[in-house]
Length: 182
Image (spheres, helix red, strand yellow):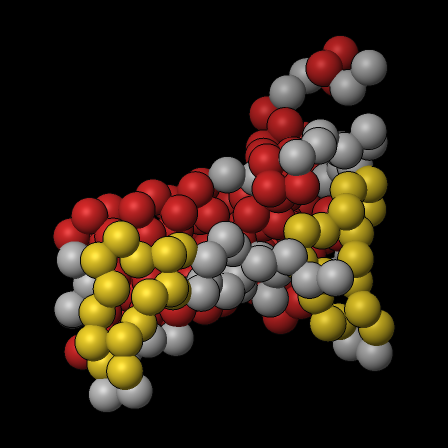
């Protein structure tokens, strides 16, 4: 079964060319889709949430422009949770082994379906190479690929909560002392 964001029932239904819209379904989106949507709109928070809402809902700007502000605030809150909370929040359980965790949304890998991440601790060489990369995204993608054994395109196809959880663990690997990993 594939996980999906909870559907939002509009408190204030709207009229579209197809009739009355009473609910908005939201789909999970990937790291690559998230990055692309944000790159297209700039740094304004409202513009970013509108872009992510268009991405998650599949609705046009014209339809979303009709959404009443209280419904928009509720939808923006759902999107904010999706982009800022780890997969464990949505799975409602912390993995027993943070280095062998199930994915919230399995990804289609090269010739396989990936349902969990098994992590390797990065070496000093990985952090040296990371420092030479130009952008935060390049550094994160490189380290993520190195620690998971996945390709960069596979990493970028991860759902955002899976990415968030992975980045938290990689932050531990890169910044915590050995005694932390007991």
